[in-house]
Image (cartoon, rainbow, N blue to C red; front, side):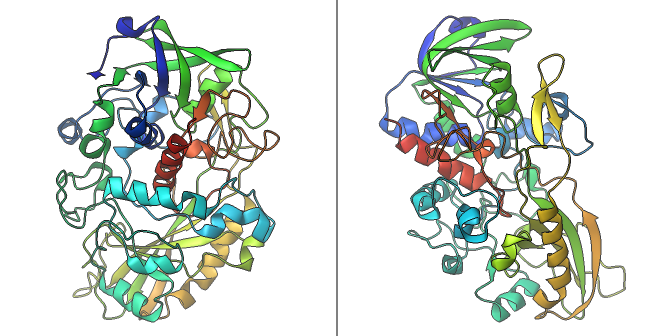
Length: 480
């Protein structure tokens, strides 16, 4: 193990495995790979290593702002963290699994694209990822997302509105599964419900710093920080090496196996700079489509749960409507993001809600290169399918909230981003429809794997990080 090698120490060297990026996709791949394989591994990370203490001191997850790393034709933000651990630093640690029917949209509803794997194929690796992150969850979720193992931790304490909803809708309303510890682990204290999960002051949220350093400090792994990968070198149907830039100077390394896990924007840009620009490379950039709502309650206090988001309601999720209108997932919030209620004695009689709809991949939302060969995001907007799904959710929200004494529902409007960068290097059965196969291996370059949310061929309503981790663990298990 050498954490933060100088580039001169690796330039011209050959490695068994070269990994690009260090977020969920890359780190969980290495976690699985190193359990059963002996190999000389080099990990190249564009950012630096910012400890939890550094992040608290500076009030930031990274010193390299995401908007400095790409340009766009749109004002829409695309949030990600460049630094050791990637998105594990900034995520809110919401960890619902994808619904089994998310993997079969085309077969069931004639829309979108089927995944080349099923929920059942991924289920054992969901369990492994949940174990690594000590996920807290509601055992009743087994009714919708069958499980072969229990959640590692008990569910968080629900708020009063959540308890009322769950009593009335036990098959649809669940406690949010999360990597914010319900009970202390060896590395992390229990969640303190401080409501600032992007930078947890208690360090209760699973991150690379408190849960994945064993990967980066493994004796077979060398880490070079400040290393921006510019292009992959290839010949005769194989990747032979890559070029990275450090402090303005370029360096080359060679290898046998390459794992591309930057993020949905930067991984696509690396492929494009390398001349690996097939029909689907960079195309289909997306994230789920979210709106904020608030329900005023008559005589019921909120904000007595034990974490930032306490409830998840699937009443608007699956069904025949998905042939024309997107699924929608309703998040019950334990934070006063719109402020407390202004009437005397009724401060807590309000329920913030987030509704998130799935979106479809659109070739007009894509990553290209600017005049300097850096990432450029071209974004047209969400699909009508997502917009219509949100309209349906708004219409049906009063009925869904029927178990609560709702006085009125306030629409706070569109959320700028869900901070999930997905879909630019999609997976599929065939090269005619995708970039990588069911094992995340490039269809043409068989020593290149792509990991992370860039491989998603459809957009679930659910937060993507757990699924990205599970896909990487599965890919590591299938390396020949």
